[in-house]
Image (cartoon, rainbow, N blue to C red; front, side, top):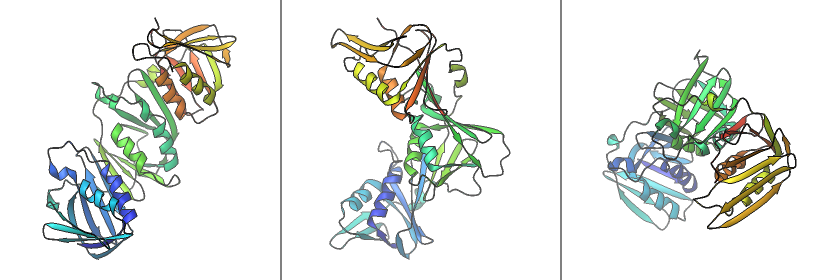
Length: 368
């Protein structure tokens, strides 16, 4: 194999596929990236056996086709630190050389045949979503997925399709985020609905693969995998096993109190009220009434904070406590100037809405 690469494009490709690689693996082959030169492009592939990425780099000159397996960290370091506009990669025997104008590196390879199969996107998509819309849906839900949970289904994002509507839903048991959008049915599938739980790591990678908000992102959903395809990349991920909780049952339907306010102002108020909270007392008290909202926090270790927030409130007075971090994370992704917060009682969850396509359920905390 012998290719001449645009250094910037190669580094971008290495950064994309390198996100898959997990340094803690007993299999040295999984610390490598497979490079395949064929059909006027250089294809890079990486996998951790759960998620796999293929990325095509078209800014190459292929003098001789072939494939090679190189250690990801060494290859990326060399390309990143190089000062050349182009780099030449040539493979002979069990080593590869990388040459710039004033540098020469020799890297030992591993047998390319030992690398696991990384699927490509073949055939028609089941459905597609505009890149910009998909990034919005991911940003509106991924933050609420569980970081660590004994309930495995919580560690993913539910992708649910009914007709031409797409729902993404995530929860960690203390809050739930749902975002809705539209899909285009492009395949021959006649299923009226389908669903899959995509691992949080894979969702993060899908978000990073989208570099053109106008380009459609294509999906193929299989029994235990989903394959996602963009103009330059294909990601394959195993689906999360288990049943996602019945999220529709969690969304409050009998709220009788409603606050409406400016999103940025409320975000600022929550942040200020949370400044004197601690790990032991991290709740913010919210007192809703006809004169607006008073946010307060109190900690024996830190002190006290009180913030007055003018807003429109309908319903009987109520006092409730929320974890401010959970509110802040949700408010940061709301992309409308106004939002609403619906309540029932101090011991019942609150329902935050940001526009017609985003809702967020948050459980209250006990305030002493």
